[in-house]
Length: 338
Ligand SMILES: NC(=O)c1ccc[n+]([C@@H]2O[C@H](COP(=O)([O-])OP(=O)(O)OC[C@H]3O[C@@H](n4cnc5c(N)ncnc54)[C@H](OP(=O)(O)O)[C@@H]3O)[C@@H](O)[C@H]2O)c1
Image (cartoon, rainbow, N blue to C red; front, side):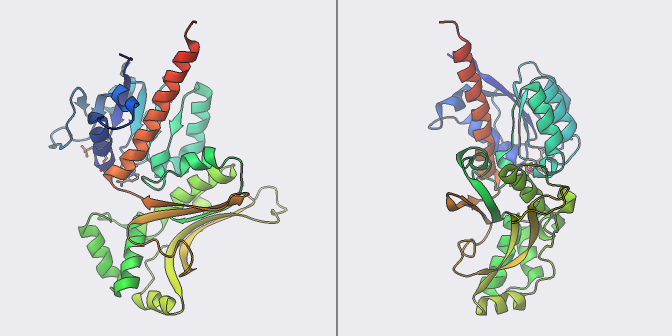
């Protein structure tokens, strides 16, 4: 039997529970799932009743002890927020441990610092779940589309606002009523600002821009406009003129590049946009996400699917854990004496 890869989970909320559920039920999945074992799990409130079954893992309210556990080889950060998540990830990297995170807010602001530390330590920090939930988009941009000159990445990368806009367009329901319904259904937070003001989409397009075009995108400099000022009649007029209103996050190459060597040769923005009804993004409705990548020589390729939720997001997190575990196994095979 091969030695198990020890995982430490920081967080057992929506995403953490989804990850635990996959790892605790390996039947009919990739054979490597059998080789992953959750060792410790950090939560904030130990007294809270948990639905996730954890066979052999210990629950703690001390996230540092998860990172420091010698049996933990991969730290999975699904607690959210900037601190203490950032410090814990940096601590894991310093200890030579690879990290998987779904934390777009953190990666959009501190991704460069984290990547530099990971490179220096020779460990991996994988972020597939940070953009598009279950949609594989990070690996394609890093690997599969690597032979292309990417010219534009645009997409619907916030499910809450897409749900609101879809219902306003299809049923004529006023913005505030749909927002209340989205909160009831758990699609929108009690404080919906990050979604409806476009901040969440700005975090995600900052990450996608860095991957597609290289260089660092200052998150604070992305012009961002949300959907709070839109009324049902705006969406209705647009529809009658042959357009859907979508909150698009766009990053595109400027041609020619600006003369000023300090400016990035990119235009990045988040704003409600009129999308012709025959455009591939116009038909993306409800909480789904879609990302359209335009490159040379590939042309257009669209990635579509569930952009959030326990199952889809955990699917992406587990894929990253398996990638790290798989690399470890390949290295062991290569290092083995003949
Ligand atoms: N939810 C989604 O669909 C989704 C999709 C893509 C990406 N993400 C990202 O995934 C991350 C997690 O999101 P989520 O929806 O799973 O959040 P969540 O449901 O609020 O869960 C957060 C978990 O982290 C624990 N936690 C928070 N602060 C902690 C601390 N200081 N020490 C120990 N434990 C702590 C909480 O403990 P308690 O249980 O005791 O409160 C909880 O178990 C975020 O970065 C989010 O942006 C989420």
